[in-house]
Image 1 (cartoon, rainbow, N blue to C red):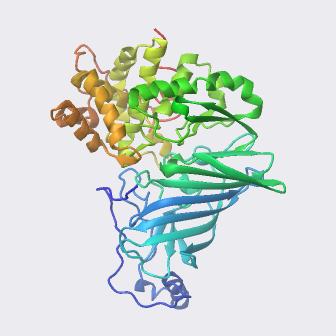
Image 2 (image 1 turned 180 degrees about the vertical axis):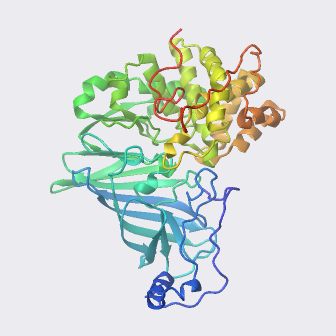
Image 3 (image 1 turned 180 degrees about the horizontal axis):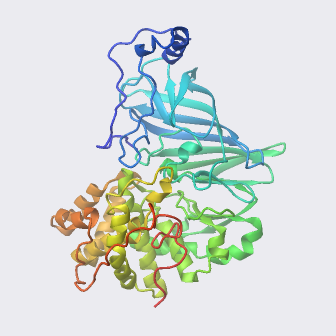
Length: 530
């Protein structure tokens, strides 16, 4: 969970001196009053609040410097109308890592009623997409602090903006990549992970499910409050709360692992044959990557038009239409289920240090999706990799190389999820296996998810570990595959050729829903069954 990556930008260091303040009047309040009274002449006495960030090159204002989140506690009250904001209270427990006068939280698309720091009222202002909090004392490195924000959580907004997803009968969440801030105040960057607790109150005829395990529920009149706890650290982008007319189907996975699937009640007979396959998927992934890293798993089927599937931690989100209307072969749908499951090792347990490391998430999930299809359904991985190789130069031209992607289009953060981070990044892993051999590659995969379990890791970490496992420096070999504008020659396949890139018809072409090679968005398999 430590928020100390090398790419941190500003560090929130206050000035050396500070005028003593009245416990009832914060500096932000005094500055605001001074601005009103003097036309801004005294505003220079303190820097204006501003949105900060930890310096992620792809999302410069995402995340916040100066503290490490230790735990989130989220409370939502849902009245039964998914077009109305939910009253909410978010509590953030954190450890201060740099001396702070102010605390920035990522939060947008909602209103704030009040803020307290360690139980005492605190002033706050909105700056850009940050909530800037002014506690009644300077926070020193090493301090523990609790920030409590009473706010609204608005499920409305443009399609594809992320955050709450309105379903036919309620709500679900889809916060990737940077949309948790549309739901609750947070340090909304995967480099700062923390356990979560959820308290959700809803009409008693609805079912609530969230990340982790259910602790209990309490009926009070016409409402029920549900309590869930995700004990292992989780990135904000992976938070999940489902509210609706749902059935929870429980079964047992490997080693007695609790498996619970959440399905629209009317769809239980239709979905059960699909969901019964999850335990076998878990067994297959454990043979490849080792023990499943969390306390439970399940599939959440949402009656919503999202355009993607998503690996929310312990409860992967799937569109109902994937199983009922996609027209895709059964083997391919099942491979997508494996893709989202594989993320629980690659992306959820081992999270990216920065968003440019996204290829480690999606490349690995795509790799195991393809490997499962080959081993279990006879769909040749080599065929798909050769096709990816042919298209790779075009993908690199359109979106950058796997480990140095171009920023997403303005206002379209999901455009970061381009084909190059899926099949284009699985191609990097294929080349690595060709170079070091299957036995070394399999050792590397297990070491990766063991050495970095429940933490964060970077591309440089992967290159170092690959070199250690292989017993030789692979930096030069991998550099071209990860950062080159052109795709290097494929070891063992000198006959493979990359096609000349085709100029996009318009900016961002190939980056939208349905793009080939994009498991969250693709509409057809790249290769037929062989």
